[in-house]
Amino acid sequence: MPSDALHYSYIAEELDGLLKDGKIEKISMPEKDEIVLGIRARGNNFSLLISACPSAARCHITQSKKENPAVAPSFLMHLRKHIGGAKISKISAVPFERVLEIELITRNELADEEKKTLIAEIMGKYSNIILVSFDGVISDCIKKVGADTSSKRQILPSLRYEYPPKQEKISPLETEPVLQELKNFGGGDLSSFLIKKVKGLSPVSAQEAVFEALGKVDTPPLSEYAATEIVAALQSLYARDTLQPCIRMADKASVDFYFRPYKMFDGQYVFFDSLSQAIDEYFKDRDKQNRFNEKSHHLSSLLKNAISRTEKKLDGFLEKSESCQNLETDKLYGELILSNIYKIKQGMESISVENWYDDNKIIAIPLEKEKSPQANAQACFKKYSKKKNTLKQIAPLIEQAKSQLDYYDSVMLAFSLCRENAEIDDLTEELEKAGLAKKRQKKGIKVKRQPSQPLCTEINGFTVKIGKNNLQNDRLTRAAKSEDIWLHTKSIHGSHVIISSDGQSVPNDVIKSAAQLAARYSKAAQSQNVPVDYTLVKYVSKPSGSPPGKVIYTHQSTVFVNPAPPLS
Image (tube, rainbow, N blue to C red; front, top):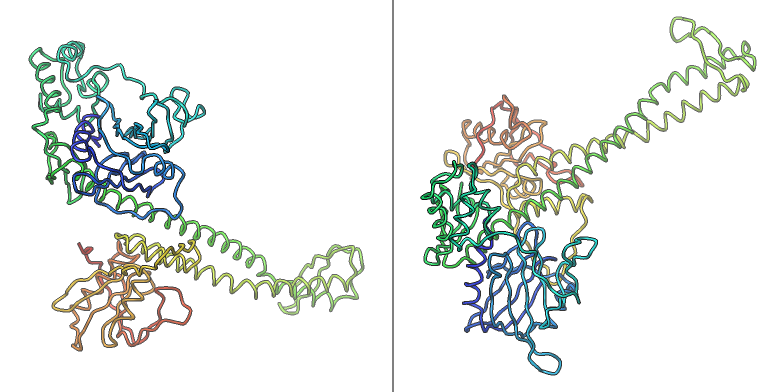
């Protein structure tokens, strides 16, 4: 991502032109490391987002709306107290640094004017948002950095604010010093050499300068002419007349934002009126994907942990059941001891007797020598009774664990098919009902969410719908008409598929094509000759108390198909 000092020099100019003399009317903190300033400037309302998120630090005007936490964080309360209603006098970037300064004019308790500075340090994992008083002392910051975290630079309230340590590099706008450094280049990756020697450039911006000048990144030692071209290319990056804010696209997805198209990249560019708009649009898509991935990962982890716990329980139940399988032997020993009790004397460790249940074959029965013959028999009957009761109690637990694992397997399939936030909400709701996820706290007015939608396609004039998770499957089957056709892979977890018949007879080729889709959206997606059952919806029912997606059906026929390609 080229969010380097170069880009933020453009952002600072843009923000200063838009927000100078504006008034801060609202301050919010939607994330623990992000603030949004509501600013009224030149008759318009703006939302200035400043983020110190390590993976997405940035500062720009935003159109996105985020929900605020129920309890205001202390840093937010501090900002509201000290800069609420403040006037913006200037926004600037520290030369060749990823540091923006928003100079503010506020009034103290005595209504006297005071100058304060809100500083945004856009530096990856070291990003921070800092409020500095008129005397250069830190008033508060969104991330506290003490001596235990950094021995070189502490950022804490009441300490004097110091800029990040200066890098021993030269300005790209100083022609002679840059030319002098380029004389020392011995060949190889010139962009990496420039990053070490020149201020304010991200790797991709340095690569662009080299590519623009020489048409390649890896080069031999430079001629005087080539060095001059490199300097010109570096300085052209700061030419304001080339500003064309844009996002580079690939496969219909945003790859990165730039202040102008970078010639080194092929691909389609989408252009914007401002760099803020480009950054906002880029991060809107990225944040959406990140939130999706974060939710998906969290729920997937909960499910995997549940599967692991259940498998461990099942192994324990099966092991216990296995240890009780010899209960009939205990009963036999007890009966044989009683029938031969006159032969047994206390102190014997075993006795060999005829087993009348097995052609009078001789069988050796172990004895406890400290017990009487009668007590040995009772001990055998007691073992038999205990094992019998254990098996009786453990059998439903084994079935329950197997049923849970079977259900969890169906949810894991849904994760593999999940693509939209609405589908993640379905899975969240399902795991909440299953007791695997904590129920979300309902705040304020309850807003009914829009349910996720199944896949939909048309086969020879017939509409075919495919559920992608258990809640979708239930909704899909419940909404279908009794004469519609319902399909599902036979004894294999998969999607419910509905062919809307509209009262017509559905041809076999349509059923086969729908069956191929049922195979595709199932656990057998990579298999061949997959069995798919189909029947009328009226023969499909949901047992009372069964988990989402679970149904029983009758009057089915079976067709064997190869999975179809996935729907685009």
